[in-house]
Length: 186
Image (cartoon, rainbow, N blue to C red; front, side):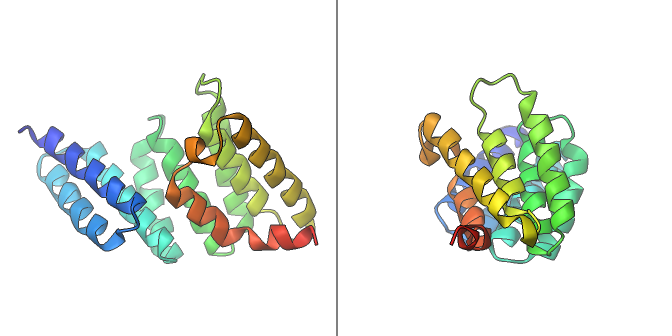
């Protein structure tokens, strides 16, 4: 089996394990994929794996590590769709977790700009970006964030519902940061 095929298979397995909530198992598999990618000089595959490890850190609440690794992976991801969109999405949540709301909004704005140019009629990344912007509003703007969050829910519903437009890890991140926006509606 070619190294690139094996690395891709390990990456797919790792992503599946993340989605299944088996983060420890996913970490082991993805570390193996990254190591093999580096040995085989598959730079982009190694960076993708580092980004997936960062998502595990993000889901576990280690925003500092996740932000550092996602920023590193993003340097290799520029203009590679969907790699860049996923790294921007994760980095926005890392900034949000670190309390860096303006950086989070800017990153979600970059995601929105990149995803808007994809040419897809219904683009799930646009909804992810808009939701990120809604959750990253300043405390005085929570009502506006809540309205935007509602518009995103409608967009997702029109596109076939959340299960067709987002991954489990995306839902988990949104739920983690949505309470202040919900509370703003009273």
